[in-house]
Image (cartoon, rainbow over all chains, first blue to last red; front, side):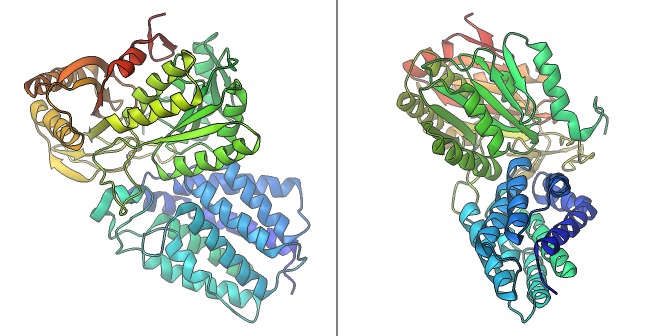
Length: 202
Length: 333
């Protein structure tokens, strides 16, 4: 089965549904070590993404990813808007004008997305951020698109879990110092949720 | 949660419509994207001063838009920084041809969004500079954190730089003054209760009746330590000592003392605390030359307060005294 613009759009719709479903969980995680807006902001942002997908059907995978990027950047605010927006924008650039995504292109896009997040947020693995989930996910390889995405989702989930004992060094949780340890990072969790939703749609 | 709202998802837009009606002739407010601008903007040949941040800190920032302070403010969703296209719209609305200075509180989201906006605006050929304020001594400033937060000092920064821009100072001068304020201002806050973010519906953290949180930020994020409740003398000293230790406020220093309510602490308690702070400073030989007391940078209905000290010189004092006419601060006009 090909991974064309329609397939990518369907995966984004699935991601929006997953974010909505987990909105309260992300709010709770963020309340524990941040300010509690992560779930609401992502839900709001993906709501705008759905509205824009309803208005137009982009004709390449890159165009779908770019629509997601520009919508998240212009509607979300906070740290999540520019970080996820940059991730989708870099992924869009990485896949170029391909009509269908190959497993290799998915791997390339994942790596480009993570590089973008690292450049914008200046966080490294171990800082207790979404980078802890995304960095291992970007190494995912596989013979099919579904295999790559499943490997990425598995790695992201393990990466997100690894944030629990960490002391935050970036983002608002860093103000808590030692008290941030013992909590799952909400950004790492939302990254894992997004990648799992993509894997499930593939 | 008990709040006077219809719908948590439209609270900012609904409030902005009311704010526009409350201040006709002073403010011009657009909704999508949300921008609060001076009614007479753009002022030709004047450096434009733009700030912004999450809503829920009123009167910051929209309440400080007007003559002698901000040209525009970008209110984000509650406790969420504004988006780059909001900042870009604000800059475009108020750019008077002499450049634009963005005043940004040091929070990850604010810095990322303003940084992105600055790139967009610069690409349009506007001379834009950014100064980040990080006055909160409660946060360890090191590679182990996102750096100190911007809190109470922001109000003083906006007033002083706004006055300079109003008097015709060029962009270089405004930027230099902004950095001088950032270098000479320090703050610290405490919370007695938590705020409730409307779209969350329950308090951001839980404090027992006999507990307080030391070193809170303005977004309902917990502070760095939890201490037993104490009397006002003890609390004010706990705020003042770390501030005085951080900057060499030498004997004979002249300062502006800003005693701020986080929203839920009434003026009765705030004036009481201010009196204690003045006494403690006098005991150290520090001269309080200017004061600001009230709820000016708040965290919804959170009970608590913050103290901010700014070391003054003649230039900063004159700019503080300069006329200002905004929704929240007005003197000299």
